Length: 581
Image 1 (cartoon, one colour):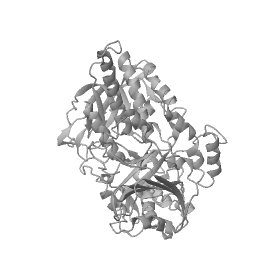
Image 2 (tube, helix red, strand yellow):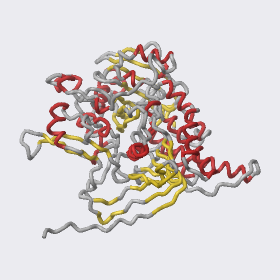
Image 3 (cartoon, one colour):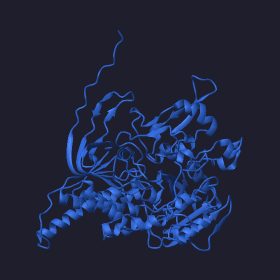
Image 4 (cartoon, rainbow, N blue to C red):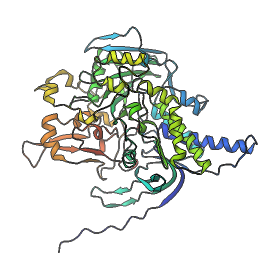
């Protein structure tokens, strides 16, 4: 009789009861936590002073779960901040030491050719940023985390939410919390000596604030039908560097956007934001419904730096930091239903990004605050059913979140037709308040369905073409992808299971490589995916997954042309360690 593998004992999990659970410690989640605690404090103080009648709210256990090793470590954005929500949340934010890099004092839009540059005579309205601030989102979120902790809010970094907990409720299933991921699992699924079972966090209200394409909320939305009647999610991918330039060469507060080069086969653009201490933030963003199988924003960012217009700014400089992130682009018509019994969803997880202006932070913060106001009402009523929580969606509909997103509700659908072909229609949308020729334009595809073959896109010799050439890396201003990953501070336990699940590797070898030249090898900004010689089949290549490089952008989950890759949450604490992005 064959030896059977030793049975592992059943996992015994601790249960923690909390009042409000927030999944994700980004701008949306932290704003929700801080605004809720402020509202409770204000209510109790008003009752204590006799300004209002009623009962004080007993101390509430507000918990923020953050999968990163610390708040801000997974936060990356351009970023130019519309401060409207920040002023509401912390009116004296400047006095409180909020890390604002610079106020915008200059803005311009350029069109770039391969070597040329042309400044548009007028800055189009979407690119006007008077009154806005240039920030580092990782620094801002660390600061918001400090504000939360000062108010007694519990932040649990290094804990990933991997499963939603349900009970029977008035409308079917009711969300009652989450389970966090186990730690200390070996590659083969065995428990190591440092094994720690995940916890069951039972909560009256759960707010999903996971950021772009929230891995847990994707499951929740499917389970509860929250995307019924909505456009499918679509996304953009952006990559970014912080460059230290020569002393005395950079005036902070400038916001420059460019169109054209280096995006020759897709839709997107670039940004250059000037920072104090002679630094700049520079990045490339592109639509993931591109037809180009060799779409590679990291390569395009290196090409952008070699352009004379940019090289004049950065010559003699050095790259300090790098990062990559997807952002939701579907807008208003891709927003899920925002509530259900026991839960609400906020920020990027709810597709609240104005892709025309590349602005989402203020909407993430505002949505968190509106969810907090609804949670406050729920606490007073001692009722977390959809009957009470539906007020959150009503609040969103009556806020500048809808005002902003309504103006761009058909933008992505139109721009996907191509940068130049769409310009007249985009202009018409500007005149008609976002309507254009037709309203409620449908998105008929998911991003992974749009990829075309290498032969159809680039011809028989794609790698001979200049657009697909990487400038020679020098380790100072120009980098290959693997060297760029080093700048992210990314770490995963190499002895843990891969969190990147490829359903059918034979498709990668026999079909995808031949037809598409393995798009994951190119669009991934972190050199996670690599086609290497197959030791078992001569003349073939197999997919190698370098999962410890992963910077959690989730592009592979979105853009694999066979929908063959599932990004799952790795062990808590793993991933990038952004400081400047």
